[in-house]
Length: 333
Image (cartoon, rainbow, N blue to C red; front, side, top):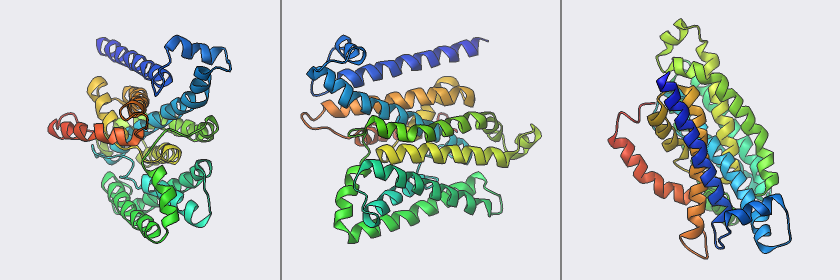
């Protein structure tokens, strides 16, 4: 009972951190807008400069940051549990490479020139790569076990990376467009684009919740999970589809944003333990807050320019990764 109350308190604290991140995202930038004025712009639209900044620029990137951060963090939790690899993230299952390949092919062969059109190609690429990884792993001796999934993902990631670099090396025009997407940013996205990926994120969230109890059992080993009555292949399939959908939608929308899926699950487990019914919601809250704070920091460190959120998370994530390596107890998935 005491542990449940403590974990509930941590989740409430996570909600407060996320609200602080949303407030910072709406108010901080090249022009500071007081919180009261930002809220008034949301509730009472007016043709003022502050209202236009809040409604046209900061609300869309806040929505995208919420979606992308929560999705990447949830996918990181699932991938680390699924592969029993504490360093697993989107690249382990080849999903980021699949989304990137879809975007590169869209630019090079379909003439797609806008973020709105790249989203669908990115989603398709991520889905194809994820299905390919799971299909290859399923045909191995341990039947889509954690080692097979990790090795298949690494192989697919390397192969698709070679395809991407091959296309970019012979097509300078594609490279010029691709480099703006690959840095990972929530800027320049629209509410319509956030709405496009929302159904995919909802599907991924539902599957993650369904697979949560099974992932707890899988952490004890396949034999124990079977003994507890779980159908491990179904659990793995649901978890893998959730990870593919969540990562594919997030990467297609904002580009690859590193370390969210790696660092946030470890932080959540350090705060509430390993039970996925607590780790999943807390990771979603902290992941969304991390991306929003990274985006806010990127707006103010090099004025009048901006540093993409993906660059900021990478700069913050490198020391976090070193800290995790030094704390072996914390990195246990």
